[in-house]
Image 1 (cartoon, rainbow, N blue to C red):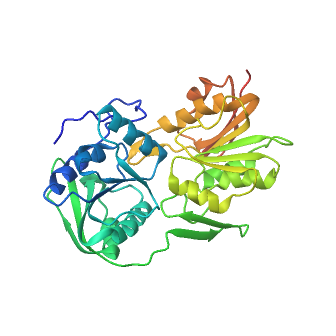
Image 2: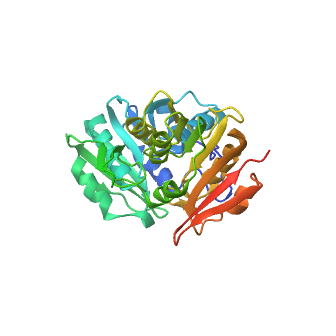
Image 3: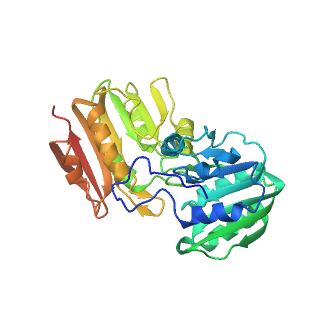
Length: 355
C-alpha cells in the first residue's frame, strides 16, 4: 500500500480523529485480489480510498461538498493525478468493481446500493467496508434486495467487508413523499434528514421565530429538505432566501420543495458563496453527528460563518438539543445571545450582531 499523507478537511478539533479507519485499509487489501482497472468508489469522505487507488483512475462518487473538497485537497497534497469525480445521481460508467464505505444511514445505504446495482457489471463485485461494532442486520436485508450473493470477510482490526455479487435489476424510486399536518406535500431523496415527517426541533423553531419585516435576505444553513427555508419563503414572500447544504441529496430535495425567483439553492460546505454582511437573518438546525462521531465542528463553523454574513442588527436563530454546549461558542462571535425559548428537549438561541 502506498505511503500517503491523508488528512481530514476541514481539520477536526479532536486530533485523535483520522481520515480513515481499519475498514478502509481492509477494503484496499481485499479488493487488490480483483480486477481494479474499472472501479467505482463511493462514500469516501476524505479521499483515502480514492488516493490509495489513484493509479487505477477510479470514478469517485461525490455526495457531499466537504467530501469534494477533501478529495481534491488530499490528491493535491500527495501530488496525485486529478481524480475523476462523479456527482451522485449522475450516470456512472459501468464498472467491474466498486468500493463502498457503509454509511450510518440505512436509507443512504439503500440509495447507494440502488445506484451501484445498476452500475456494476453482472459479473462484478461490490466491497462494503464497516467496523464490526456498527454492524446491523438491516444491512443484510437491504443488500439482499439488490444483490443475489452476499458474503463477509474475516474480521481484521475489528473491521469486516461485506462482499456483494450478482446485481439484481430492481426499479427503485429514490424519492420519498409525505404530507405534513397541514397537507403540504414534501419530497426528498433517501438519506436526507427527517424522512417522513417534519422534525420536532425545526417545528419548535418555526413556532417561535420572529421574522424581520419587509424585504430582507435570509439563509437556511443545513437546509435538509427545505423546511425552514420554505417557512420563511411562505411567510415573507418578498424575502431573498438562500438554502444551503453540504449534502447534494438535500440540495436536490430542496429544489423540489422550495422554489421562486427569489429562492436560491447552494451545494456548499460553508457560506463562502456569500460576501460579508448582506444578510438580515440566518437560521439553522445544525448537525452534531458526523457518521458515528459526536462532532460539533460543523455547528461551530456555521456560527462563525453566520456572524460574517450577517449585517449589523442581523439575527442568527439556532435550535438545538438542550444538552449541547452551544452558548459558549456562540458568545465567541455574538455579544448578544439569549435563550429565546426552551422545552424539555430543545432550546432556541437568538443571537444578534451588534457591530
